[in-house]
Image (cartoon, rainbow, N blue to C red; front, side, top):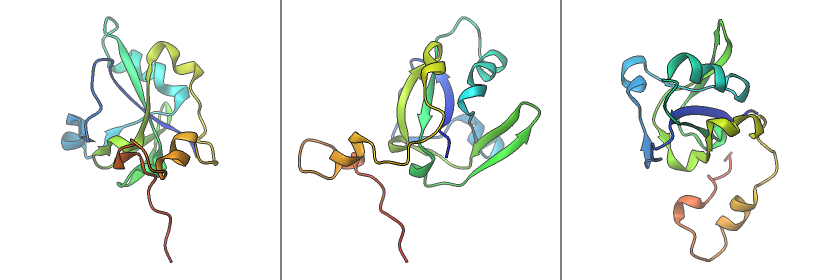
Length: 132
C-alpha cells in the first residue's frame, strides 16, 4: 500500500476535515504518489510559493479512493473530505524525496501509544479493526 500525498501551500493548516475547492468542482481531492509530487507542483502551483505535501494514510480515510490512469501515471483521487487523522505528516516539498512511498505494515509508534492512558487526544486513536 502506498502513501497518498496532497500538495498544499506550506502555510495551509490541517483542519478537522479538509475539503478543497476541487472536491466541490470535480468530486474528488487530487492526490499523487511520491514520485509524481514534484511534477504536480511544477504543473499546478506557482513557482514562487512554498509548498508542502500532506502525507495521507489511505487506511485512515473514511471515504472512497480510486486510482485514475492519467497520462502522467496512476493518480489517487479521494472522493470526500480528508479527516485530519489521515494526515500523518506535513512534508516541505524540498524534502519529498526523503519521504516514504510504501506504508509500513507494522503499527507505528504513535499508533501503539494512542490506546494507552495519557495526554493524547481521542483523535490519535487508530481506527477500529475490521468486523465480521
